[in-house]
Length: 279
Image 1: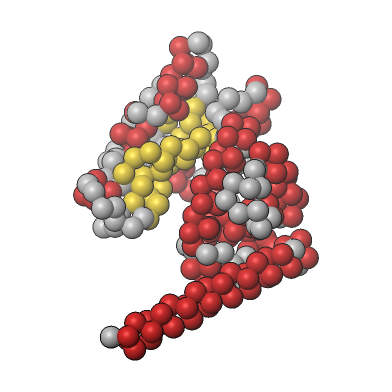
Image 2 (image 1 turned 45 degrees about the vertical axis):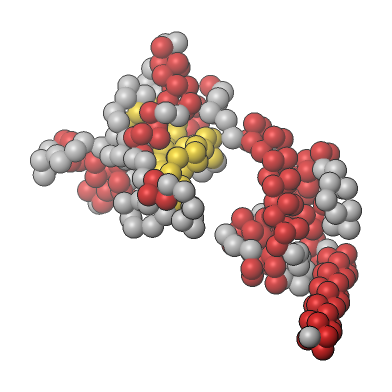
């Protein structure tokens, strides 16, 4: 028994030493890594942002980040780089856990992810993700949508996207969507410049797009604008959304060759259809 206990002790000691060595190697690599030394193309491929945008986010992060929340050895640059790689690739093992530039233990990264995302949500989301638009922005949006798709008065588009997730431990049936996998049904509204103006990712994948829309603050926003007298201003959605005085959706099962069918065709294909007729 004594020999077995000694063998177990030696194995545990070796594992401890291996973990300490790996932790030291990760720290050395992180300290030596400077993402701004990367080529612009490689930088954008890794982080989905250019260097100017990365610096802007880093400045916002640095103003609130407490360097001693969980590990004083991890720099703000490494924290932000790790989170952006995770978001860009949708996973931990390759993009964060094994990259020699970022290399973080999964437990460390999980803590870092929560801290960084909460700061970005608090500082950046209210500034960049908002439905309120100026009259100048509305006029430009209406011009762009009409030029590209032939729709007058349009300022934004809405659609749902299913974000695939691992099946949760409880009530997993709520997250099983009609496409056959587990997801979150995220509703996103974008403007004429493809900027995200609103996002609602609170609901499991089994929820229909119309259900997410009806419970969203976006519907309340556009309804309020309509009641305040805003007219000839719409957002466009697909058939999964209800027709509203401020929300244009396709006609359901229109007769071939009818004006309703033409409307649906233009909505789907844009101005190239009109241009092909003229030629």
